Length: 274
Ligand SMILES: NC(=O)c1ccc[n+]([C@@H]2O[C@H](COP(=O)([O-])OP(=O)(O)OC[C@H]3O[C@@H](n4cnc5c(N)ncnc54)[C@H](OP(=O)(O)O)[C@@H]3O)[C@@H](O)[C@H]2O)c1
Image (cartoon, rainbow, N blue to C red; front, side, top):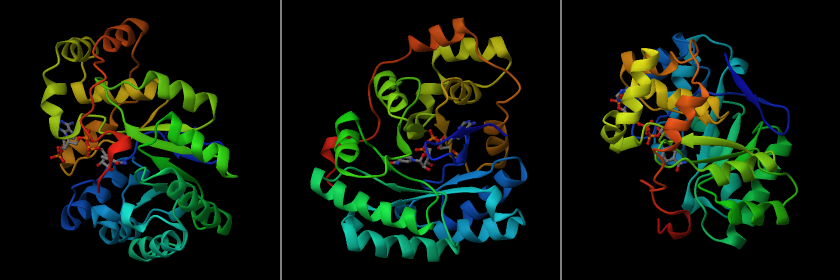
């Protein structure tokens, strides 16, 4: 299993299972299928309303807790110091776990609030109940606000990243500051058809005798970006993890770079009104 090392030394599997929009009854089987087929990393969030089912699947899998990397996220309405501490405990109880591997602030909701909220994450980290902490949907100026006002640098920044939104400059900043970039919507989420129909991606997929989603995932691995494709379909869960027996070459990376348009699918980070 390929991992990346976070700035506190913790290892994080480079591929994980996404679970947004996976209903509890679906996600239970999806997590079991994933764990049975090599995944050791599951991404959830309070707002996905599936933490309980995920915790149950982890227990039922029979795999040692310490071998699985579990991420959850703090929802926007729970931001603030005390409310974050409370919300974290609710997530932990729902998951039925003693600790999570990574706890993230889900979205940016203002500079002062981010600092107060992040200070609660620092307390949680010091307590040992989150083995790593970080943020999501943060751009450079949001990260600077945390780096300038908090003590423990974030370990991870999870943002929308895929072949049409490649985030090269944000990635450079994160690397320079030892923050691991993590790609959500790696298959372009609900606009996956645009990915599947992309001619450059089809060409590269044919060359390697792989599928377009496998190329999209492998391209992030080549960049050392953590990637969390979501699926509830057993064949697709297995296929999305079958990305470690080939590599993209310089020509492939150059070709895929031309697909970048910089257009987002999800909301712009400074305009979150929920
Ligand atoms: N931090 C944030 O704000 C944030 C925002 C969005 C997402 N996320 C996280 O990132 C994860 C991934 O993002 P996402 O779920 O939006 O999108 P995604 O992983 O890019 O794409 C998921 C979609 O692709 C389909 N799919 C998966 N594998 C496929 C394959 N091999 N062939 C064809 N279709 C395939 C899935 O359907 P099936 O399930 O039917 O296979 C689903 O419709 C989320 O689940 C969540 O954990 C975080």
